[in-house]
Image (cartoon, rainbow, N blue to C red; front, side):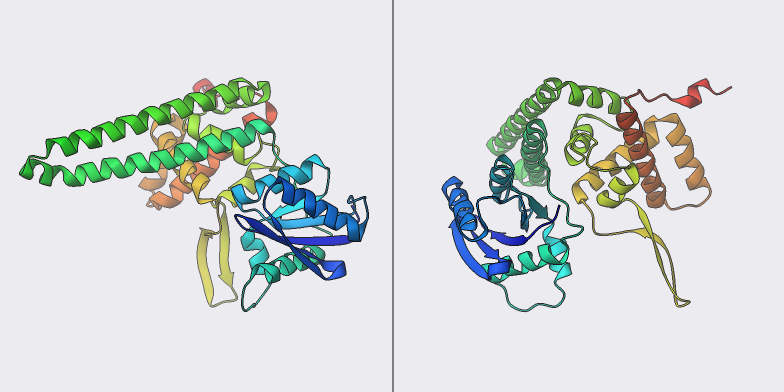
Length: 331
């Protein structure tokens, strides 16, 4: 697509600032449906009725940027949601910060990378719903973990001062949170069951040991049901489990290591999957024990298993075939 105009948008909770690069124009709008309509009218005033050859670029800020993305998608206007870190690092050394300047910098980023910047395609509604439920479940799980930890720490003082009511309150909060988490998980299962493609993918990948409801759901969400990444290796890089060289000349000859630039949530979940697989999957268990017997690092071994589990998941999801444990048929 050949773009003639580049628009940078800096989005905040209540407003968003817009910079039209080719006209050097700036304006601020409210971050609501009326503001989106006003934005389109303002752009058409200076660009023309057809916005097919303009690229609207803004940072991916979750709940603040999603409504604008949905609106632009409905009116078929090209837009790109970019990682804030990617934009920040592309700017080099900068000083000062305000919304108007940030909008201009985003427009310059869009122009600079106009040949390679991908047009954002929003995921299906089921994926968005799943993501919302998973985010809430994650928040509740952390809240429950906090209650459990505080309850454990308070046991001594509860016994010493006979604060039985306090213990009962903790138990009620933990039980209520657990019930809500269970309800959300039922909602997640219902969404997956309502879509044939999601249902098939979920059934295939959960046959792999170490991949349960939460891990499978997050993998489906982050990969847009395995359509967003071409291979498991690219997703491994995104998740921060792909090892990279650490060498330079003759002075730096370090070991391969993973990058801190990662989706830490999925990285943590894949680590849990690897630990589960290392103790329940016979093939993984044998590999894990053999590596440890050879004196290899426990963490590096678990990282290899993370990659193995991920490779299995992508294989069955992309091929649409069940995972077969070949070692069961070995002579």
